[in-house]
Image (tube, rainbow over all chains, first blue to last red; front, side, top):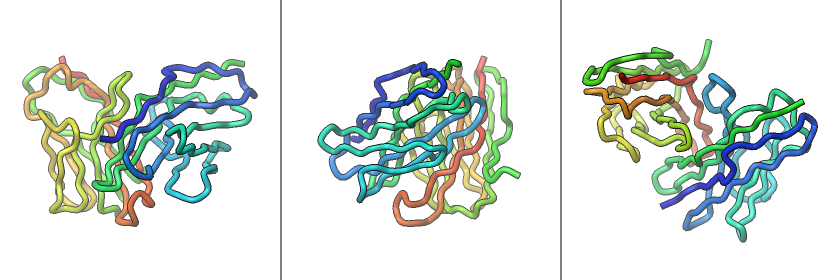
Length: 113
Length: 115
């Protein structure tokens, strides 16, 4: 069965600093990978997704993620964070067979001035 | 207006009560999902429906039931609520496209407290 690990429960970053959120997945075939963001009191919003092709994926709000098959990773990055990026971030892997998403446990991002 | 709405947004109930959470969407999507979110556990799939006549159990369906009344409506019921069903519940929808090329759109969530 597929699984997703987000090893960092909580990360604190200074405004303007770079960000990298880690995601490792387990899946038997080529994975379908996603990053979602959940702002306080809101539902989840898709940041970006990877299906195939270029391993560096661009998303909304200035985020990008890189798929590394050899490391089973799909880390999310942003070169310069803004206070509005404070939220919880979820990585997810899609099951090609039954079209379900399996989510990681999330990483909460705090931005300090 | 929001594309995916959930009612109620907050609910407090007592153990043993039957409650229903409702989800409506105006996106014209065929596929609808119910998830629950617990701190430290992420989102887990309860039930999903690919069209009105197709309903499937997710990974944690015990204690829950669903009804797909129409393409746009998907309700989640707790027949006899228990405290460990206290959680944040999300409805999501997606279109009938090539697998995963249709994004899942989430509602704002329903916060449920079972006393």
